[in-house]
Figure (cartoon, rainbow, N blue to C red):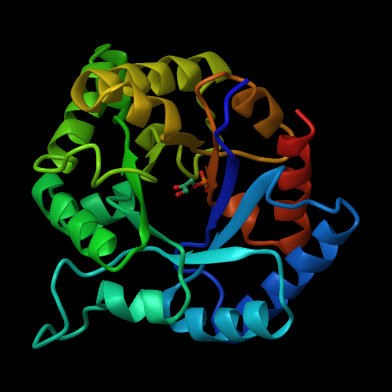
Amino acid sequence: MNDRTLLLAGNWKMNHDHLEAISAVQKLAWALEDAKLDDSHCEVVVVPPFTDIRSVQTLVQGDKLWLKYGAQDVSQHAPGAHTGEIAASFLSRLGCSYVVIGHSERRADNHETNEVVATKIKAALSAELTPILCVGESLEQRQEKSHVEFTLGQMDESLAGFDAADLSGLVIAYEPVWAIGTGETATAADAAEMASAIRVRLGEKYGDALAQTTRILYGGSVKADNVAEIVASADVDGALVGGASLSGPDFAALCKAAVAK
Ligand code: 13P
């Protein structure tokens, strides 16, 4: 047993407009009601597109829902002349708790390097948002058995320049690229191997206290029927869920299964 709170975060990616978001969050809240979950069991977080966040905020605050929410990306810049960017301070004003940074889809589609990811983490921390740093290898790297080295290298570079005090509260999501949206889930043993390697590396670089408090998630085709096995590993503290988080009832079922593990 450890003191890390189980974290179940639903990354909607570019799905659900703001009206669909309201319906999805309402259904999630209703479907979770009978489980009577609270902070002693887990945190449940939705991560909608930027254009939905104000609607989600209004709903969560207005109905006093026991749910948190976050954003899928953040600008590395302070507010100013950066067309199309969203500043970290804007997200915290909207009540976001978390921000996903360095998702493999952004690394691929927007050429985000580890250096850019590090600047985004800095921006998030300065606005008191908790970063969920995404790392993970390609299929080729896994087949070459360089997956651990590659993933730890991504983490090292993405966290370059920070010290343990900066990173308290950080969340790391291990998302092997080959398991995202493919129906291919890493085995619980694969997820456990990487989560353990990440925790050991955090201990070497930042000390045992940070290593023991940092939450490490697995992401990649997590569903209600495989989440319990994945989060049963001692070093896996939750899941970053894509497709299975889009439907409120499905995501609620997944959260309940994870808590019941
Ligand atoms: P899927 O759960 O759809 O595979 O997506 C995982 C993911 O990328 C979450 O960030």
